[in-house]
Image (cartoon, rainbow, N blue to C red; front, top):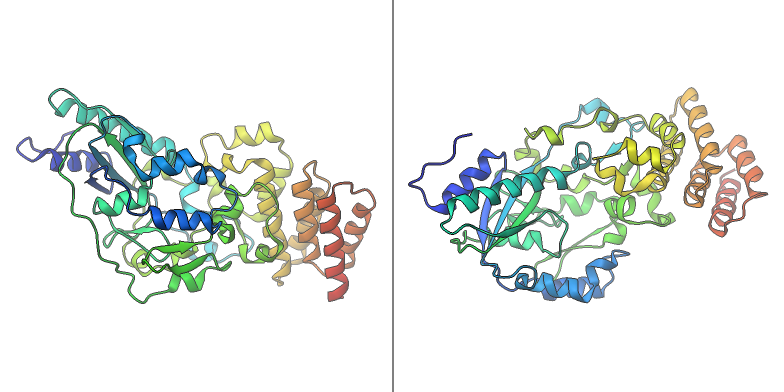
Length: 405
C-alpha cells in the first residue's frame, strides 16, 4: 500500500496514512487538561449516567481530566474517525414486524476493527519518527473524553444529539484515540456550533433522553432514558413508562442520527468490510429472533454472537429487549392473525423462561394484548410465580387487561 509523499509534514503524512487505512478523518491535539470537566462532573452529580458507575469512579474522573495520568510522556493525541453507516431498504426499515439493531452493531465488533487500524497507525508512526514512537490506542475502552478530544483535533462539533458531527461526513463514525510520546503540530479546533436552531433530534427522541444544551452550550443527555442505554447498558428491568417508546429497537438506537440534517445530506455507506451487516442482524423478523433466542442458553448465545457487539447485552438482556418489542408490536394493532398467534406463543414461552428478567417483561408484553388468551396465560403463570418482580409484572399486566376490557 503506497503512502503519502515524503516531502509533506509528518502530520500530513500521518493523515495520509490514516486515509490509506480507510479512516475518514484524522486530527491532532495536545494532551491539555480537559475543559469539559465542570460539565461532566455536573452531569454525574445529576445522575444522568444511570447505572454506569464506572464513569463516576474517582480515579476514572481524574484520568479523564488529565490524560497525563493515563500514559507517561504523552505529548500528542491523535484522533481518528471510522465511518460505519449502512443503508436500509425503505420498506424493510418501516416494517414494525422487524427487529432494529443499531447500525454500528450489525457487523463485527468495532473495538476490534478500529483497534487494528490504530495499532497499524502507531507502527507507521514508530517507523517514521527518528528514535521511534511509543503510545497506546483507545477505542471506547479507557477513561478518555473522545468527543472533546475530537473537537479539539478539528474533527467536528458537539451536536445537540451529543454526537460529534462533521460538516462533510455527518456523525455515523466511531472515534479512536492514540496517545503518543511524539510532539505533533495540533490541528485547528472546530469551534463553530452548526446545529443552529435545529432541534430535530430532541423532538424525535421517543423517550425524551435529549435535554437540549446546558448553560455553557454543552448538549445534555439523560442516559437513563436513552434507548441505547436501556437496551445495552441497563442490566435490570426497563422502566415501565419507557418500554412503549422503545418500539421495535432491540439493541441500540439511531433515531437522533437518522433525523439529523447533516446525516441526511452527508452520511455515506462505509467501505469497511468489518462493518458490513451480518445477515441475521440486518432487520430480522422479531418473531424469528425471539424464537432463536428462546432456543439458546447463554453459552449458545455467546457462540452465536462471538465477535458481535450484541454479546454485551447477554442472552437475558437481548431476550428482555425482544419481548418488549413483541409487546409493542401487539399493542400497535394491525397484526396479521398468524403472526399474532406466533407472538402470543413466543411470549408464553418467554413467561416460562429461566430468567425472571425475561419472565417479567414477557408478562408486560402479554398485557399489551387485550385478549382472553393473553389473560389466561398470565393467570396460569401467576399461580406459580415466586419472583417478586415477576409477580408484580403479572399483576400489573392483568390489571391493565382488566382496565382495557
